[in-house]
Image 1 (cartoon, one colour):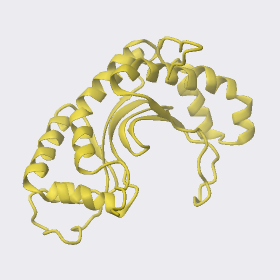
Image 2: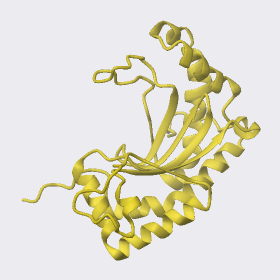
Image 3: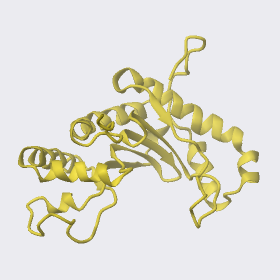
Image 4: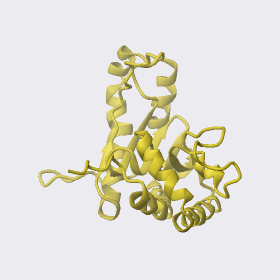
Length: 225
């Protein structure tokens, strides 16, 4: 995240103002309110997040900081701003390591968010195959033991083409798969320990992201010619 012209500030934690900023935004989500408090966003949210990502870049690579604006074109909810600041490190914008701060505090994890039926199909084919499927189950079991929550959109019934008694039917129901560790708002959130906690979380998620990169991929594969 750093540039040759100017060194990024060293991460020192997310100040309490980051959480109170989003708590107020949840109540008054308007352009006027945002513009009146944009300096708080820049100082207490955006700059600390960039410094956090800069401190993790050597090990995990460059990050994408998501825009604070919501895409409301196809949403019934016309609130203009997201009530959290998220960032992703990885392949494209849908697969990799994730971190966010909101009124609820800190959340970190990783995985993939499906962008097409073909991507979900590749995921399910790898879950179905004995070797790769059992490998993923081993990874997920280890993550559950480390207090990670499994997330991602899934169907309630049996996916088409798979048996209801498939030994990995619970995982096959997923269209996408993410794991997340919710830290809340501990006292150390405003200290450098936050960087250590996010780093350790991403290291724990690394076997999952490696599996997903191998068997799913972030984007659609190039068409054969």
